[in-house]
Image (cartoon, rainbow, N blue to C red; front, top):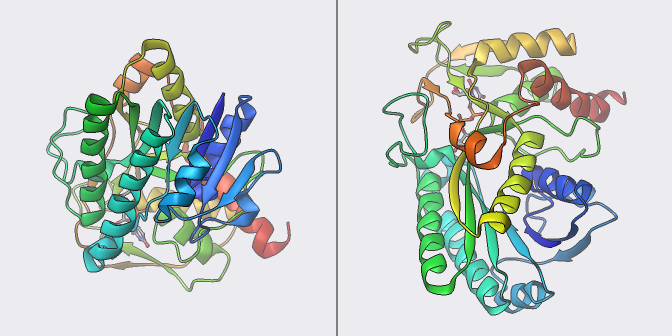
Length: 326
Ligand code: WQD
């Protein structure tokens, strides 16, 4: 099997590429390295340095006889998307249209798309399953939902099968330490905590401790990137076996609070990690957890690396090596 991974040098993309290589796939990564990193590329894969806005280049790259295409080339900062929607329209929406059209031209029969729990918006009930209403609260989530709709149309009109994977909070690093690229200027909780542990950030701001949760801080469903990566392989197998598309949550079904993660990080790193309670961040729900029952039923997939210690320890190992030379 030969797979084209667009955005395969990024944080999630490199873990997905690693898993496909481990499963014996041939992999080509197409990435503009805007947030992806050369150090996230593997010697066994073919790399094409290209932008999804460069349609001729994308089509040339796509016409190498791929069995599947995985699309992970999107901007993902929800806060930024509310200030610079233009950037998200251009990259996430126009860029995806290029990818879909390139897949049609190159006759790639299936696409796996990285969607997000952000398509649901403020939860109406918990845990959130795939039937939960979609009502994104930020422009980023809107772009993901629009792309989901495009995929439905391209299946109907052009016969392209798809898997829409709605990720919850991706976290952690490859347990074998094969992926070492650190995200620049992260806004997500675990990398922020790691930066504070390494002293490159003064403190962690805890966005509110007055939520209706056991310790008052926000609770999220953290899903290890290696679990996510395995979900992609399982989704592709499903499409091949049943010739059917699917939309599915990938989450751990477990919620951890900000303080629980902070405590685990202090224990595992042995660093004090200063933290301060601040105002709630706009648009943050108190609690968001997934139902992953559908992924279990259809894909036989379940999270295996998403316990608190593995999430934090695999992250800390990468940060520690980079900032404390082991
Ligand atoms: C987690 C918890 C914060 C930073 C985002 C996107 C979402 C999806 C996943 C991709 C919350 C708290 C955070 C900090 C804090 N992305 N926090 N201090 O917002 O749940 O989801 O990533 O699809 O679309 O919005 O993730 O890691 O930012 O926050 O207290 O410095 O940590 O309030 O409770 P979020 P996060």
